[in-house]
Image (cartoon, rainbow, N blue to C red):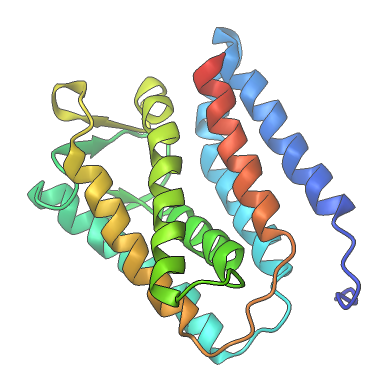
Length: 212
């Protein structure tokens, strides 16, 4: 493994920016849309792997936390999907790949990316940890606002009456807030220079698709 004491982000940034630029163009054109929709799980898997590679100090707490977020969010999604009581009434399409309990596995990765990146971004702010968690959770909700139209357009998931309920955004905030409180009190060294860039790249991807 490369020495990460001096982090050169040129290669990961080139890879991730290239990945999402190509994906945005692929989704723009009707002839290539189906291919690139089905590549979304691959994009998320690559993003997760590259992101976590640049976590500076791994220990058992961070490993358990990342696995816990992945599993817990899949369970919450499964309960929400079956009951309609957490996010509202929705269903997943087939474009996000293999599922567990009707929930695409990559949704656990998506939650992990968002919580981990925003946690890194706010951890050094000069606020109480309750406030920092709230700021990061609000960032995640704003990300979901960008993501929802794209998800519905490309059949990743759909809502009853094609309307995103307010309950969905409230649930995203509460779930993110709890996960972030745990992360900020993890008593582990959280250092990842790539994390803010990953959040911006993925957010920029969804913003671009919405605009164009």
